[in-house]
Amino acid sequence: MRHDFAFIKSNKKLIKLRFDEVVFIKGLGNYVEIAMSGGEKYVYYRSLKELINSLPEEFMRIHNCFRHSSLLFLNRCERRAGQF
Image (cartoon, rainbow, N blue to C red; front, side):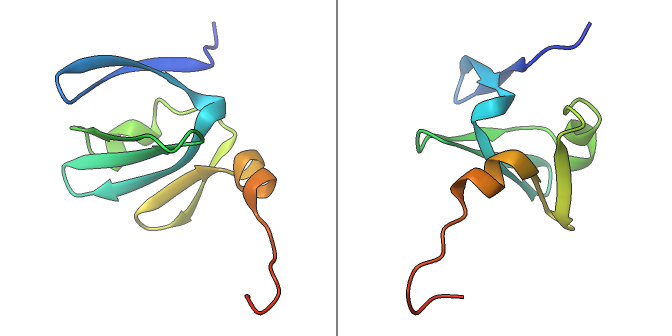
């Protein structure tokens, strides 16, 4: 059975992490930073390598320490005059 969420412990709280709200996941050694579409950021004490195995297939690696959902990335990618 496939789930569209997972529970993580961050800042001594149990958080329901909805995968469709994740903007990016950044590896920071023995823990990861998870940025959400609402602006929240969670620090989760688990290595990126361990976390990758529990993520849905929609997530793709874009750098050695980053992993994000391609769909969410494309939904939030904007080109502004004078940038890129």
